[in-house]
Image (cartoon, rainbow, N blue to C red; front, side, top):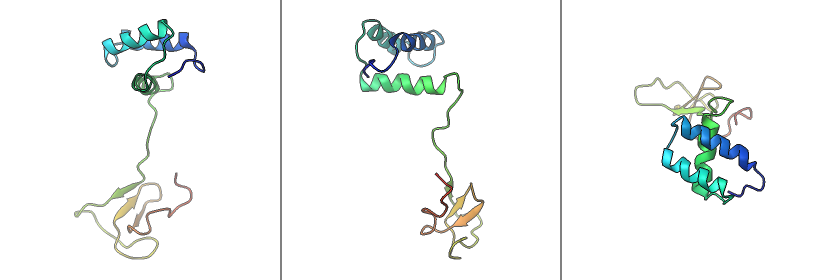
Length: 113
């Protein structure tokens, strides 16, 4: 990670706070903090570690990274007909409260995404 576009001081402060709060691996934070103080570039793994944990524990709270809209039905689940074609359903859509078959589940609603 090149710090040309990022504020090295602010990044070092975030790393220091995470280390002191005992979030994550303390030794790893110490290595990252030392690199930042020497103005060295972080490896991809180190940059990812900082980004992931600072995003999760940042001021904005926990960030939802994925949304699971379609759940595959189990053998015990009721299987009404597909909303689009009427065939046997395989998935339940949480956003639209609808049951869909495997062929109709892909791209069935333009509002999803």
